Structures are given as C-alpha cells and as structure tokens.
Length: 390
Ligand SMILES: *[C@@H]1O[C@H](CO)[C@@H](O)[C@H](O)[C@H]1NC(C)=O
Ligand SMILES: *[C@@H]1O[C@H](CO)[C@@H](O)[C@H](O)[C@H]1NC(C)=O
Ligand SMILES: *[C@@H]1O[C@H](CO)[C@@H](O)[C@H](O)[C@H]1NC(C)=O
Ligand SMILES: *[C@@H]1O[C@H](CO)[C@@H](O)[C@H](O)[C@H]1NC(C)=O
Image 1: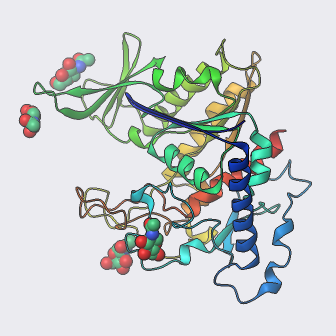
Image 2 (image 1 turned 90 degrees about the horizontal axis):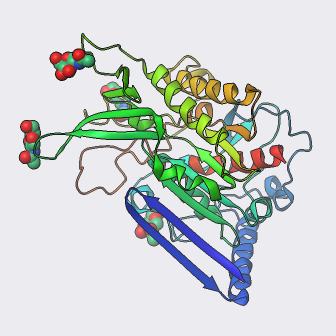
C-alpha cells in the first residue's frame, strides 16, 4: 500500500492528513509526474535551442562528489527554468505564489547553482525518493523551514516517505512577555537549558532532521540558563550583560545539537542536517520602514560580502555543529546544508510586494522565497548531501 502522509505541526494547532490510495492510483500519479517531467525536459519552455538540452534526461551525479564543497559557486543562466509551476503544484501557499500576485518579471526562474568543483545535479524526484524511501524527514525551524518543505513538496510526489515540519521559533524554550492586557510585548525569554518541546517530541521518530531557525533572534531577548540570567540580545539595559547576535546563535544552536546528540530514544541512524542561515534582502529600509527587494537578477560572487553578518551567523552555526562532531562521545551523524552564500546572491528571489497580503499592505516580504524560485535549489543541495552521506 502506497501512502501519502503530510503532517504539519504549527504551535498548538496540529493538522494531520493521511491519504491512502490504491496502488493503481499511486502508480498513475507517478506516471503523470514522470510524463510531466519528460514533457518538461523535452520541451523546456523559453528554449529554442534543443542542442543545449540534449542530455538532460540523463543527468547523473558526478562520481567524485564526496569532496565537492557545494556552498561555493555562482548562479548561471539555465533556460530550462523550474521543474514546476503554479499550475502543476497545487500546494504552493498563496503568500509564495509571486506570479499569481502580479510579479512582472520571471527572469529569477532561469538560474541554476554551479558549485566551483563539481556539477550540482538537477532535482530528480525519482532519485530523491529512492534515497529517502520509508524514511521520515522533519524540517525543524521557523517559517523559512516550512518554506523549504513547501518547495520540496512541489518538487515531489510523495509515497512511502513522510515530510513534516516542527514549528519552533528558537529551537530552545522561548516565551513572549505580555502586557497586563495579555497582548505581546515583542520581548522574549529563552531558556537554553530547555529544548522546545514542539520539535523535541517529534525527534524520536525522525530519520532525517533538517535544523534551521534564526529570524526570531533579531529582537530583544533575555537569555537564561535555568534560573541564571546570562544576558540579553538587543536590550541595551545598563544592568544587563549584552549578548551579541552571533553569541546568541551560538548558545541556541549548541543547545539544540547537544540535545540531538544526547537523544537516547532517537533512531541510531538519525541524520541531522544544519540548514544554514537564510539571508534577507531588504534594501532602502527594514521590513517595517519601507524596505524592499526589487532586484530582478542575482548578484555575482564579487557583489556579495564574505564578511556580512549573514556569513558571520552561518559560521557561528557551523562552528557549533563542528564542535558536536568533534565530541569524542559523538554518536550521531551531522552534516551542513550550507545555503547562505548561494542565497546571499539571490536578492531577486523573494516575494517583495507580490505576496497578496491584505492585512500588511505596504510591507514587503524579503525574507521568504517565491515558489517556484531559488529556494528549490535547497532540495538539490539536500539530494546531493544525502548522496554524499551514503
Ligand atoms: C499562476 O500564475 C499566473 C501568472 O503567471 C496567474 O495568472 C495565475 O492566476 C496563477 N495560477 C494559480 C493557480 O495560482
Ligand atoms: C495593551 O497594553 C499595552 C501597554 O500598556 C498597550 O500599548 C496596548 O495598546 C494595549 N493593547 C490593547 C489591545 O489594549
Ligand atoms: C534591570 O533594569 C530593569 C529596568 O530598570 C529592571 O526592570 C530589571 O529588573 C533589572 N534587572 C536586573 C537583573 O537587575
Ligand atoms: C533603493 O533606492 C535607490 C535610490 O532611490 C533605488 O535606485 C533602488 O532601486 C532602491 N532599491 C530597491 C530594492 O527598491
């Protein structure tokens, strides 16, 4: 019996949809998708030069993949465009459906990531499903983690494989302070001694955990270790130790990785991937002061700063992972899904004003990514990484 399970946990709300389909129906779907892919490969839109595409049906990973650093490279033009559109993927959330909301340019769809030392194979649903058959993959993190899952869902048809997201703002336990009238203050307390149960409870039945989060740390946050208050990020109080953003990331990710490594009732072959920080691209202002991201083409390598705060956060995240990996008591498998540098180069990939939000008119989304869009490459990284780990 083929199964299609889509399980999403969001805060206290929990939705579970289980659909069982007869084998024939599943096979039929697979056939449709295969036909679609073949049609797509054979007749890539916007291409009048079939010679360039003569071998796309036989894309295979490079054999000497293991040593390739996927994170260093550049975006190069690719006339094949994306593997799906808003008419073939029914699960694109409205807020990511940029073309539906009137985004006028589609140039951003025609790029592929080219790592320096190798080729990154184009996403291949069949090959991907081979790699993860029977497994449960869980995206642990904030709304950008969910954005990745939504992208993967569009790239795949799912059978005998479970995708889920465990919503968490901070990975560790975090609570918002409230006013007397119960409205939120925007100020948070984190306890790095306590892991956020929202994802910790899902960890034992996970095979592949993709850990991210980060965007919620950009606000006033008091950090505690149990009863002891260590300090505060973005608080600026005279009587309180100031914690830098980088240090805050270190404390949170270190706690999360320690928890995973020490997880007693987790699966022995649990693989944990750190999906590094996803940069935002607000220009001429921040999200609430009219910032926007109206560019239509990627940055070149020499247009991004390797010393940017995004890269600093990424490095801090990776350092925590390396620390766990070098732990002599290390029991579990960890690896890095390092997307920060590649995504720094994609100021053109966000919804900007094309996200159809009725309540927040005038605010632009330069944090999440359009679907289809450059975030689809994360699943190509993911597929390559799972192959490297085998
Ligand atoms: C898909 O995008 C087109 C614009 O390219 C838009 O007209 C259409 O309404 C969208 N369809 C769906 C189902 O979102
Ligand atoms: C709640 O209290 C805060 C602080 O006193 C105030 O700024 C806010 O407007 C109040 N909100 C509502 C909905 O009453
Ligand atoms: C620091 O000062 C603030 C504001 O004056 C006060 O609310 C808080 O309790 C003080 N914290 C400590 C640890 O003394
Ligand atoms: C930022 O402002 C400059 C100067 O007004 C303008 O040329 C540019 O397009 C703006 N950038 C964005 C992303 O809107």
